[in-house]
Length: 341
Image 1 (spheres, rainbow, N blue to C red):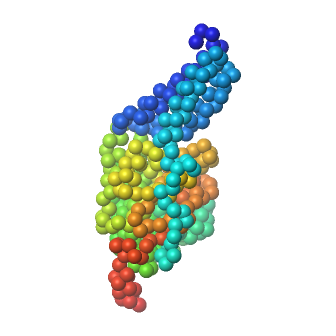
Image 2 (spheres, rainbow, N blue to C red; image 1 turned 120 degrees about the vertical axis):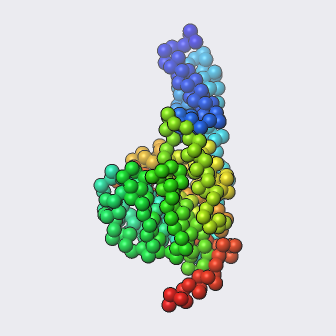
Image 3 (cartoon, helix red, strand yellow; image 1 turned 45 degrees about the vertical axis):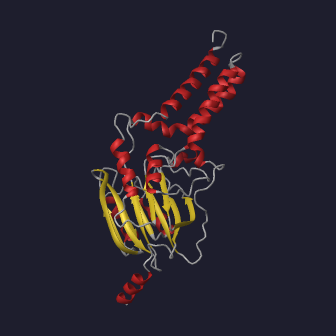
């Protein structure tokens, strides 16, 4: 190290730091400080690559050692990110084969409670015209401003809060049940809804917006509750759609456990991470807004919407449910429709 220039020493220091943080991120702990390192995997890979290239010119004669540090950092983080690269095998066909299935458009969006550009979100809802709408960070003001849009839906359920964890749900699908419960923590609602398509195919919707991991706190209770939210649905149906702002990346231990214990599949896997936050710089941001499906729930379309004033980008999808799945209730749907007529 004595023969290195000041720039070379700085490069070595940064590369060593990146590798140390990467190794620490693998430690099995519930400390928020460690869990937050999952958010740094992509930036650390990028920076390790940049510093590794710089080391070839500025860290002689130790450039090979510097490259080893860079490749180790990139390799470990890539191993964790692998399912969300274009080189991985997709978990869900996209578009999936949905011939003969009833489908519904879905919009899940964190509006940002302090955002006052209500008209842009209203225009988004008008444009997407979702059959299933989940809005997060909604307080009384947001519900009031979006009343014209929400009034178009036959079923509405909301828990407006001033703590940035309010939630509003609306659907035009037949609703067997819907409730918002304090699942991950108090005053942080989780949505559970059992819906049915027009052909009787039933499925459950889980809407999540848990609190993020914080440096000074343990994530043990939060992680267990998030996993339980996906594994224990009220009607215990096999067909489930899980959506929302998880305040977490899909490759983290927490969200990976949610998918593993709930037996979910991610339509983004094998196609990239679909970053949604921060909206202004999503190309270098994180996929905090999630969508997971299982069994008879298929995905025909999936996209990230444009910036409409929030710090998140909207997640838009078209999902379909197999009418031949065990959860379908064709006769029940027909009888209900006959009774209404």
